[in-house]
Amino acid sequence: MRSIIKEFKTGIQENLFLGLAILWVSIMPSLGTLIATPLVLKGSNYLAKFPWLNPFSLLVTCIFLTLLMGLALLPTTMVAVFSGFLFGWKIIPWLVASYAAASLLGYFWGRMVTKEGLDFLIKRYPQVGTAIAERSHSIPQLIFFIRISPVIPFALSNLLFAFVQTGWKKLLIWGTIGMLPRTLVAFYTGTIANDLFDAINQGDDRLKIWIFIGFLIVSTWGIWKVIRSRN
Image (cartoon, rainbow, N blue to C red):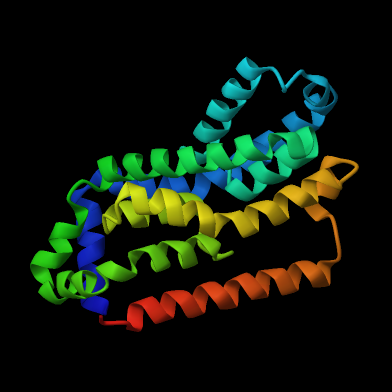
């Protein structure tokens, strides 16, 4: 395992863009949240009264949300909270569409920065390629359980999916399905809040903890099952 980690570090050193991408998706969503929160607070009255049901406005909003999530400028959870708080349930179909589009944007962006990143590992450890091939039928399940995990960030998982070349069609379908539970919980939290601070901290802390634990258990069990499977 240490050798594999060492080779992975070597691969990152050989591909500067991959290293920068990992740094970006690790830092930028949190930084974006710190920047966006006061801006949303300041403009919440105007944003809430804007005629969002206009088809053009909805399209622009969808594109904007896609860029925010797909380029790792904001975490998907915060986008869901902001959307629920500002717009209510009328925006939910567009939020789901934006999420699906952001998955594709993040995946193809990841494919560009990872390039042939998997090859260096397979060349040195052929068993890695064999393991991936044996589990190729389980890729949809792996995508689903990674997406439902509350501890694996959306942007980082896009890089992971691009690195192991899951394919965009499987990611679009199973990634969207897997992300729906967390997205809906965050969105609903935003809709019932009286202000943005409530939206971020709304609800019974114990309930939040149990939801978090539930998602974590399901995702961990699913990922472990996929990794352990051989046929």
